[in-house]
Image 1 (cartoon, rainbow, N blue to C red):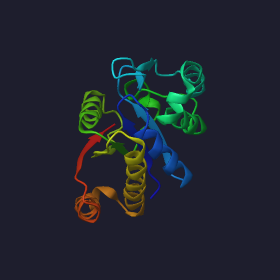
Image 2 (image 1 turned 60 degrees about the vertical axis):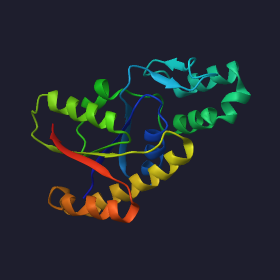
Image 3 (image 1 turned 90 degrees about the horizontal axis):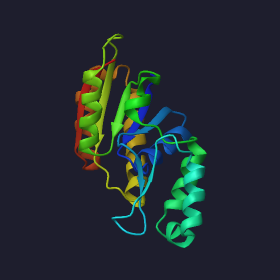
Image 4 (image 1 turned 180 degrees about the vertical axis):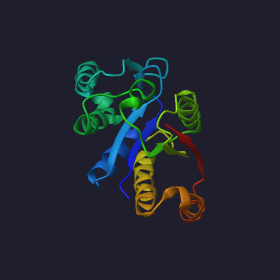
Length: 193
């Protein structure tokens, strides 16, 4: 079954874009989004993040940070992350503004508060299509190493869902099996478009 996937994260674009990149390389139909008010990237201190509007091209962010402090942003992995992101898509998109671009079969989030935002957003939309959408949360720590691990787990989960004849009939078997195999707790909810 060919499914349409969405990866949704908070506002920093690391975990969702790592998964987007991997799923895209494996031929899955995937989009990625953030849910925050802005895109926030680490700065020289916790109190000084680099803040960009959604829609700002990744290349612009890359060039901006390279001008500010190339050594810092290379060392903390932000420049390589932005380079990867720009090879996947032009700019970050915000879920609340862009998810109406089409309906998704599966929406995967990487932190519980984002899961709550997505479920609430879907609940508050007009359900004109009455098409089901599976929203799954798999907590992934927000660092480059965990993002890579989370992307591999997301790929495996999405491939299992793709292999199912009808995910609605098998989700109650897929989730517990995934949790046992990977020792990761998943939250999931079924919403509608």
